[in-house]
Length: 121
Image (cartoon, rainbow, N blue to C red; front, side, top):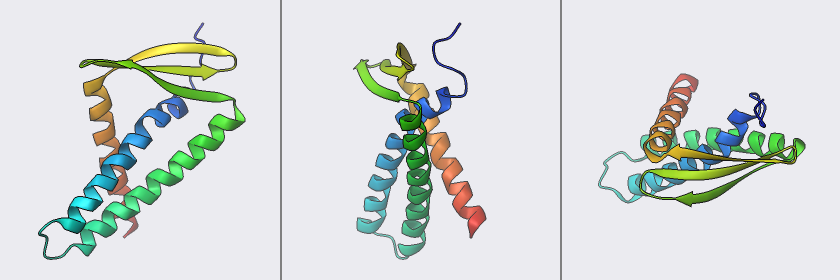
C-alpha cells in the first residue's frame, strides 16, 4: 500500500515543478526586457500571463498542502538524479527524480501555460 494517496501526488510534484517554472519564466522575461527585440511587449506580456497562471496554480497547491499537512523538501542530488522527500499524514517518502525528467516536465508545463495564454487572447 502506497504511503501517499494517488490524489495527493500531483500536488506534491507541483511543489517541485512550479517553482522551477516560475524561475525560468522570470529569467526569460529579463532576457526579453534586455534583449535586442524590436517589439518586446508581446513577448513580455505572454510570459507575464504564463507567470500569473503558474502563480495561481502554486497558490492553490500551497493551500491544498496546508489543509492536508503535506510538505516537500529537496534532498540530495547529483548529475543524474535529485531526491525529494514527501511528508504526508505522518509518513515520509523519499523519491528520486531523473534530472532529465524534471527538465522535460518543466518544459512541458511552460508549453501548457503558453497554450493557455494563447487561448485566452
